[in-house]
Length: 333
Image 1 (cartoon, rainbow, N blue to C red):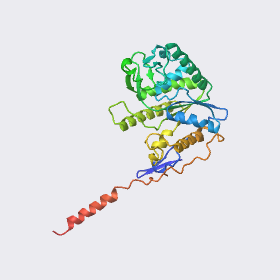
Image 2 (tube, rainbow, N blue to C red):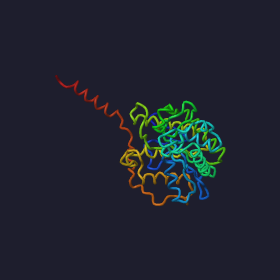
Image 3 (spheres, rainbow, N blue to C red):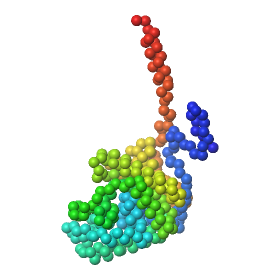
Image 4 (cartoon, rainbow, N blue to C red):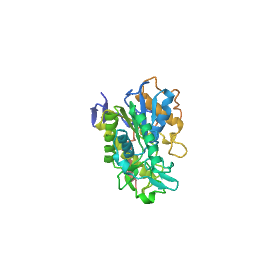
């Protein structure tokens, strides 16, 4: 049984791991839920995209949501509920007028349509494509990226990104930062779709990519820390409540690295391709059968764990100070 020792004595406990005992590879239980027969669907921010890009290399079927990136828990929840036949509020959201025509508030803002009919036709086709990806999935991977959202004060819908600049002044979108409680509720509703409707396994993860920008008065580093901290707290509470949900530690791989800069490109935000490959290889090691592993993953770029020495005790320093004071006092005047 693991033990923890201190000056007070020793404890025998079910689980103990000290910071000085950490290793390059983060410890986590292997749960092989992905086989050659599995279909894996991903939705969310960067990790969802990177995983989908590499699945074909090892022969995993499936893919990412064809609509692109979803950064917040609320936008993911809206879309997952739509796939299950919910989210009626979307129909109440009017299309936005831009100089080139109309755009869909919940899709790519770079694509415009000449009229409402063509917009609705394109939306229906996109919905069918997304439904096909998720309704056949055995595993759904959800990646949360940020808490800063924009939502409609009329319908309550949350947009996937800041509204188009041509429509922004007219629609009166409200800026909102998701709370931990709101994200836990979103995740519970997402789980009800994935586990209850789709009958699929659910993996959740947190994106390590920092905010591109913040819409708060905070320094972007402070805003990013608050964003990731809320997300990670919500995910932790959610996974604790639901033992049938799997958490993958892509976030911790980056932010607890001996040297974070090993992972990042020159912009200090996006992850190097070799680092992406390493993160995906760890995901497959934990969740895929042995035949579905990435070959020849390079880890030579990673700084090994070196800072493991215990904190020096303050007592020797105190004793030296006391001895010095005694000498000063005893010195003849």
